[in-house]
Image (cartoon, rainbow, N blue to C red; front, side, top):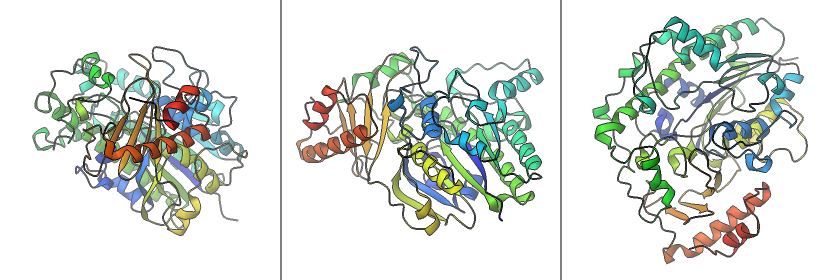
Length: 463
């Protein structure tokens, strides 16, 4: 009887779709992610269900939209929130109970009241443990440029990315000797700001040769007030591409390529131990990063593609056919359903709100998925503010429950600079997208759909 497949889950944090080589956009070098995507399925139209760190991970572990159980924002920011807890179903726990050796390395942002062991991980190496190793070895290092990033004097081999890789390789080599399959989950904070790549990656990208984001001409005219306010909340109002963002963008690219180098070492270990053919490899990210796009930083109070459109790839040699998937997918919602099907995990009926893609991936045909994707946002940091987004190949509609809505025709405005919500030419399309959004939010038990939410979306009672 063939051994059950291993599972390697590689989680990036705040990775833009256009900043991996598979996107064919900005020339960011990620050859090792290409080893995953080129030998498996790469998803061109993948969207996060929610562009916030902890709720996105909760969606992955539960297979449900976080709003359906109260996972609205990061639990440690401003207002307490319940979110996912260990009494809920989690497929990761089921994998352990099937007899898998399990390990989690890096950031734990699923349930602050519980440990990874409560979710099925027998071994855990925390972010704090790795950071302590680095700070103990390099106690005199001081960083001075805050969220905008800087070159890291820590040598590459001792950097966080490569410490994660070293520990993962240790597990891979050890567990290769076991008769039991394994599931290793890697969650490194890169490229989450502040980006601090080590050499040679800190100087890999010349700021003067980096193409500015197409949205740098943002004026916020006709857009929700809160977006413009972010310039002042973050003290960004005087920053330009030349005096700031080109340097941050170069560091952002550098740390992405550095993490890719670490991933390459892990893939090499899989090949060296003869396990790569029997290992399902998933590369995904929680959401993107503004990184100066629309003159903004981080990820809050907007639903631009900078933070909602993300890269994702799944490789399983001999099973998942190499292909570029154009259908719209929902990352953290579709991954659980797909992996559970691949691994044979028993899931309660109706538990998952995503779709199982496995049959189409095995057949090498276009995923029979969606014409649109939906992302949600519930505010944090500077105050609460709820948005719900639905996008298709050409159009994007954003319902801002307490402010002006947004609508973008991305065929003529790919940088989402002009809000067409009041343009009568799009009236019927906007009405259709509002109803599509209402259907999805109702299906997933979104509490924002109360009497006013349904009135706004079904009847179009919005300014």
